[in-house]
Length: 119
Image 1 (cartoon, one colour):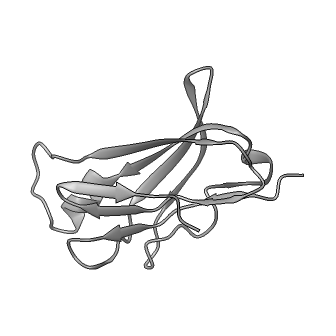
Image 2 (image 1 turned 120 degrees about the horizontal axis):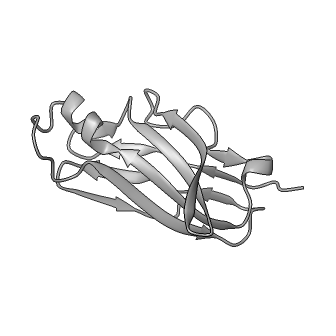
């Protein structure tokens, strides 16, 4: 039985607060093809209400989180309509041991982002 899980959160560095209302999708790549695992919208704390994957949906493999940052950045008033520097941000990573907790946060600003494996 798999006991691990994948979680995420988003911090708005330009505003100095959690990014609320940001859409996130999680895909698992099978033979190079993305398969949707889950989707969520961040809450007032910039977190999803539950894990993006756990139990049967969390197995070793290659995953991709898609953060729909452009819609959030426009709604937050950080950027105007038109061509955005950052729009959808893909983070591709591998999971070798699905019995661990993997936390993959996004630190977001209108012109840059950072991520890391958290705890």
